[in-house]
Length: 83
Length: 211
Image 1 (spheres, rainbow over the protein chains, first blue to last red):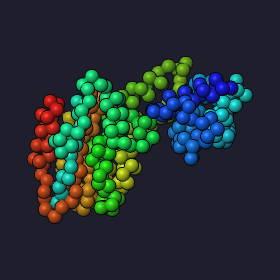
Image 2 (cartoon, each protein chain N blue to C red):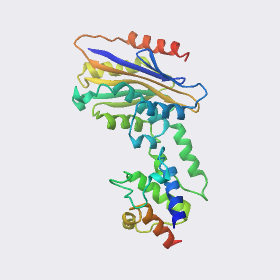
Image 3 (cartoon, rainbow over the protein chains, first blue to last red):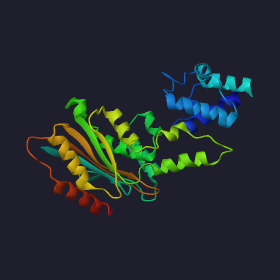
Image 4 (cartoon, one colour):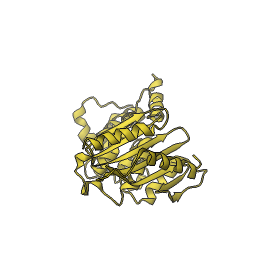
């Protein structure tokens, strides 16, 4: 799980162009949207693409997005459960 | 009717404000590094900047330089502040990048973050959002910087009381080159700034930077 979380942080930084940010700057329990990393709706789409492109996981129900993309840790748990 | 309060020119790794050199970067640096250097020099903290394409980044930084000490919304109604920008290459760099993600049907993952920057007027929108402009927001594409057209467009907006202030200029990013020329125009009682003034400023900047 730790390796997956680290990979995810690096992939998020690259996919979302979060320049000047290091993986250690992202708390895996911190909220990705809202007060946390402050991501927006375009970033949400980018994360959906990331899951499909890098992990072959397609989110069938858009309503699940809020839970899956709550934090890096929740993303990692979802990936682990669906791979 | 309007005056030019300040003008800036950013090209050939030099940033000039009112003809004075403010920053200069090594000629060997690519514009990605130059833009990042300017961002840091300005002490900005605007995470959205890093998501922008290079055209938006250049327009954004140019506006920051000219507006950092003079927020226009404290002087004018938002609806009377506008933006008139010329450009030649549109967003073709990002268009090409986006196209490359569409070309392989076996690995078809277009990036939403890239797609949103495949319109050049996103750059003007980014500036308007940042500085609270709600007046005329126009971007015109022409093969070369058309000073006469831009000046006439601004003149008509001031003449018809559509604007009290605006940024006017030219922002262009190509494969290995970039140029940004931006000026702040503000309403005055008398006609203080002419078409010839604008032409002279452009010519001087080009000479100063050997552009």
